[in-house]
Amino acid sequence: MKKFGRTALLLSAALVAVNLIPAGVSLANSAQTSWSGRYASGAYVMDENCPVIVEEENLTFEVPSFPSNYYESYGALLSDASTVTAEYHLYNPAGYDVEVNLAFPFGKLPDYHLAFDASVLDPATDPGYAIQVDGEEVQRTLRHTYSSLWSDYDNEEDKSRLRENFLSEGLFSYSSPVTLYSYTADLGGGSNYARATAAFPDFNPLTTALLCPSEGFSYDTRIFTKSLSDGETFTVSAIGQPLKEPMEWNMDGGGCTMKVQTITLGELILSGYNEGTVSKVDWFNAVCDRIISSERVFEDGYLFYQSGSFDLDPEEELLRWYAYTVKISAGQRLVNRVKAPVYPSIVTSGRDYYTYRYYLSPATDWASFSNLNIKIVTPYNYCGGTMGEWQRDGEAYVWSSPVLPEGELKFALSPHDITIDFSSGDADPVNYGLYMVAAALGGGILVIIAVVVIAAVIANKATK
Image 1 (cartoon, rainbow, N blue to C red):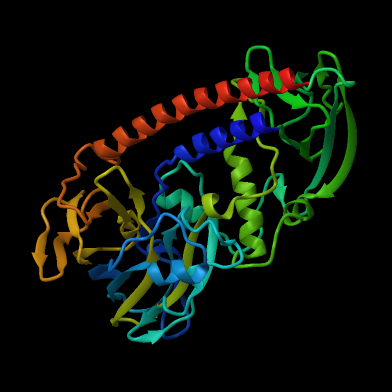
Image 2 (image 1 turned 180 degrees about the horizontal axis):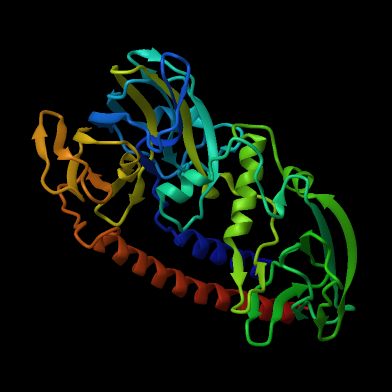
């Protein structure tokens, strides 16, 4: 037991040493999701594009303090949050009234909030954040869509995932039947682990969507592979029509027992849903979008989905939006103001800095856009960004452009007088270097962990 205690201590130390950079949280301009127009007579306007233009946008970041790497309470994270305020000066030059449905995507929660469940308690619901039109607060709804951990914001794709109702596209519908084939590994008391293989089953991809959580798949032999421990259970799912024949998983020194169950897709997905800040509609649609994004296609048209999960990680896989509506009469000018929380990515490497992102591309939805003014109010040092030279104005850094600039806004702040180079595009070279170092350290630590585990096994056998 003492040997195992020392081993556990070494293993814990090795794991703690893997301290990777938290993922950044991005924000974006309000994106148009839909609009309608109507003349005074009540007739609807059928123009293809919304006529409303942005005559000016004033964008203000307020960063009085930097976040910590970890928070033990919701209140602590909320009190430490910086904010961004987007102020749009809108003008409707058309001869009819317009109602525009907008959505302001403000990113995912940071991974330094670990002490509380963000799907139930989200700082974005705090009344300190608000949306106003000419000084009057308008109703905002917190919405969620699926977003891969590794994906960047894409205006058209991400907007398309923001649906008002349950997804109903082909087989991915709330009422679609799902046949669950649950397999349990039985190794007969022999080896603790075994490699299972199964041939690609026979089904019509127009009537069946196969979800198979395999670890590997050969497109040449059409064989699935999966490593299983004794007693481990996994599920293969068929949305729509069941498989013509259940998949048979073969294992050396054992086999799999199978149970079959039928349920609707809506019942299955919502069985893992908890009431909170994420609505049932958004949860269902996000799970479906994640499954759809795992699609694997053969050259001859056959396909399957390399997913077996009907659950989500709210912190890593859900992009948050404020949805709201602005009504603007013919010839009217008004000011739309959106205030949201900001959480940067954190780089700690002896010269700490914090990176902030704001996506400008949604502004291309407007009929016209001009006069972007950006202000960063902070006591810290501006140490690099994507928009060229900034001017110091008191306790703020300012930058302006008469037109919508190309690319997205990214900048770094630091308590130190340093310079970060953003000239290489989406990622600055310093971040790449840190990721390379982290990867190298992580690889080395994994080797150490492997050695420690092997040593523990040998030590354990020696004591028996």
